[in-house]
Image 1 (cartoon, helix red, strand yellow):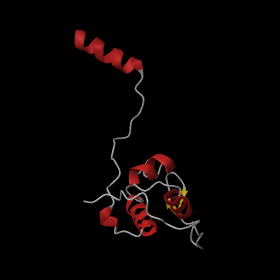
Image 2 (cartoon, helix red, strand yellow; image 1 turned 45 degrees about the vertical axis):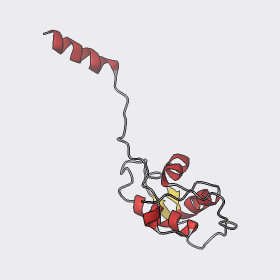
Image 3 (cartoon, rainbow, N blue to C red; image 1 turned 180 degrees about the horizontal axis):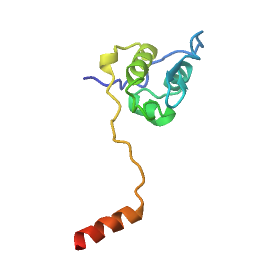
Image 4 (cartoon, rainbow, N blue to C red; image 1 turned 30 degrees about the vertical axis):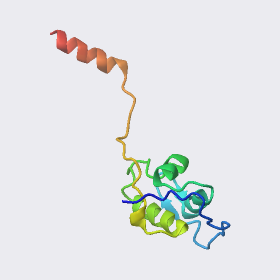
Length: 110
């Protein structure tokens, strides 16, 4: 799998499209236009897009939008979607209350 690394590539000026208000990431409410704008602002990898816009970080963890985001980024860069590395996948994290750890410690003593 190749990575797009040629940051000297000229993308041209961002030109709004009629469907830029189309919702791509429903969980985080990110539109196609926001993704396209991010590419023109220098976010060229899916990980950068994810960190910048939070695409794929909602409840579905990118199950519904990741292919769409990848396609949009690839079109803006003028490359095949296969040339883009997938975004780094991480498990969703939730804070754990200290009382849960304390209860586990009590159980181990018994």
